[in-house]
Image (cartoon, rainbow, N blue to C red; front, side):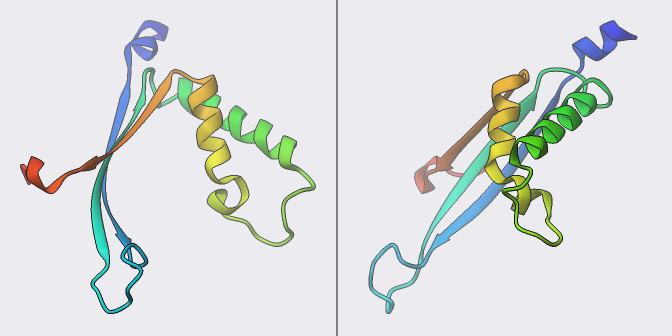
Length: 109
């Protein structure tokens, strides 16, 4: 069972279009758009091994930030933001790649 968990992995692929309405500085021109692709890779089983590790990393970050968070209800993104992603990338066997796809590279979609 442990061997299977060590061999497991997860690769999350994402695409996005970033719209920068301020890129040209001229409000009369159309906003500039850029297409981005991303890959977030987990090198072990996410069903148990990484679920436990992610819970621990989240809990430790919440402890570190306790007292500096604003009151009221918080979503994970508003409470922890990019700090949790940075912590996951630093302390776990994961990687995150984001790159811009140029128009001349084409698309297979």
